Length: 250
Image (cartoon, rainbow, N blue to C red; front, side, top):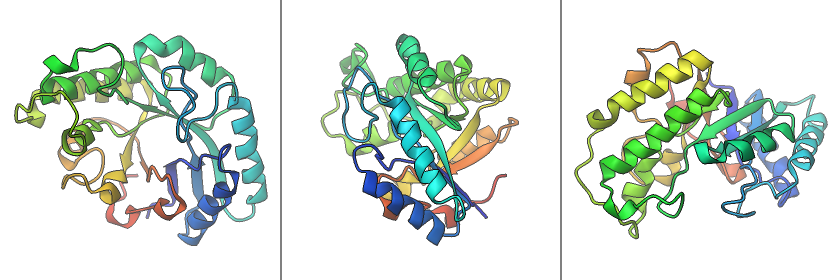
């Protein structure tokens, strides 16, 4: 039975009232722990959506600790953060991490068709997936992260975005399997866990199920990895979503 939601976005500084709703929902589901993991402040994107505002990492951590204290007799509330990794941003990432005290640091590859100077117009689906996964390898090798999340997030671009310049080349997972294995070796070496993320179950952009899809989880089984689960909830109703559908991998 899964009792911990390790990936949630209550947007605690911009919507402080929502934090209580997230915690109450987790408690209603019988979870023993919920981890708040709002996105890092990021100079590339500004303070959009659920990002911690620039210069407010310490304030964010204190806000999470206050909520944790408030509910300490009901459920454990942990302080985490989701980091958008790219090797060009390592110094900024380290500055963010040094500005707060975190129980969990999630590493994600959010490479999109709008950033980092890549010529996406010359890329196929396979090229793009490989790029995302190569970035994940670099993140895992950095040793900065406790957990690597939504490895195959490239799926959402293939299916949800109709404005991308990528060429559909009939992507097949086998073409990027060596890169996946490199990521798992790096995670194994550095002690980073693999997150099973249920967001695709409620976003319904394809039929492959959770991140990472089953075929990737089958490859991961060749390595000595820890597994954690996260809903990636941005609203209270999504906390713990689909956990009853995930086999407990320990």
